[in-house]
Length: 137
Image (cartoon, rainbow, N blue to C red):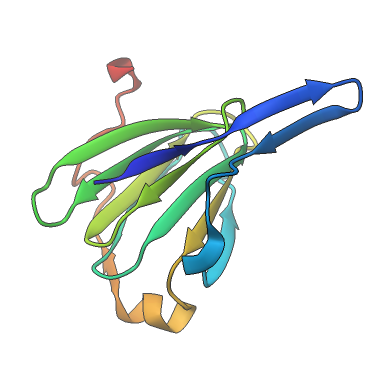
């Protein structure tokens, strides 16, 4: 089951610091940043049997889902740079997200190399699991 790792924001006369101090990078082998061309754009669904993913929004806001490939159980989360958190998506899950603001930037941290990830890649249509109705929040 996916879960959130909480962070915080500190603001003083020098500026702002966002952090997630309880996140441990020991399983991370690579990372990449995603920025959609517009708000409301959906990137989904992408799954892995073995790979762990960690998701952090450095700018903007997203609606993100994690779906168990074993049970089809869905989870929905809002991640925002205004409330720093990292979402852990375990193996045997698919994930997808929709940007809710312009210029949103999303970092994905992966437990797999690119070669390992490609060998473990599962793709599904964006509407296979419909979490995109923001009225649920």
